[in-house]
Amino acid sequence: MLACVTRLNAAQEAPPKRPAAEVKAALGEPKPVSNPRAIKLTLVASKQDHGPGEHDYPAWQTNWSRLLPKSKGVQVATAWQWPTAEQFKDTDAFLFYYWNHNWSAEQYSQLDAFLERGGGVVILHSASIADKQPEDLAKRIGLAFQPGRSKFRHGALELKLAASAEHPILRGLPRTIHFVDESYWPMIGDPKDVDLLATADEEGKSWPMMWTLQKGRGRIFVSILGHYSWTYEDPFFRALTLRGLAWTLSEPTTTRFDHLAVE
Image 1 (cartoon, helix red, strand yellow):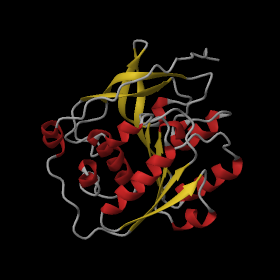
Image 2 (spheres, helix red, strand yellow):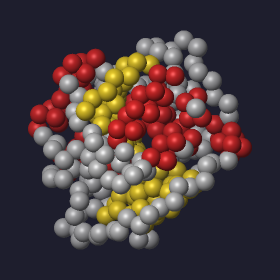
Image 3 (cartoon, helix red, strand yellow):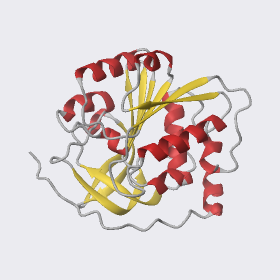
């Protein structure tokens, strides 16, 4: 078993806003798709479990419930702690951002059935944590974090895009992007099982920070970044996450939601 590393969460300062010229050079001036298909999304959250501006799941759920419908054809619903059975029937993609302390066989079964029918799943930051038996979560999302076996650090990091520059989720973005957020490492599971998008260096090694995974007909996008509320306002993080969402929906990856990155 890997040793537990406790990291004191020293107060972090919000990074400066990304220069508009830098954002425009990477993303251009994205415009909404004129006749997109109708999409139903469900944002799953719980109560905040960290300090101000950290793991603020309710604020994310509120803010992104307002953001996503600005894309034509998008309908957004919300769920608290876990989707309902009806939402599993009606949703095209779920976005999970909360620490689920109670992963269960029933929840995994519902998730498996949703992916089997071709649903999309976006896992943000602490949604990748399983307190017990993280191997079960890793089977679904590729890699999982377990307190006591995995490590973490809050602070500045350089996100290094690992896949081809032509990958649709990464296209146009700088090969290295500076963030102030939280890294997790090592994750439980085999990195060879995922399509790696981005890494960050910790303890002299590169570790997965973003990846995609195909499970049957279903698609999954995972971002370890997302600890701080300011990260969700960053145009580059938004672009990566929104493109990841589009990818899970088999939508045009760089055009379906890119305009929301600069809202």
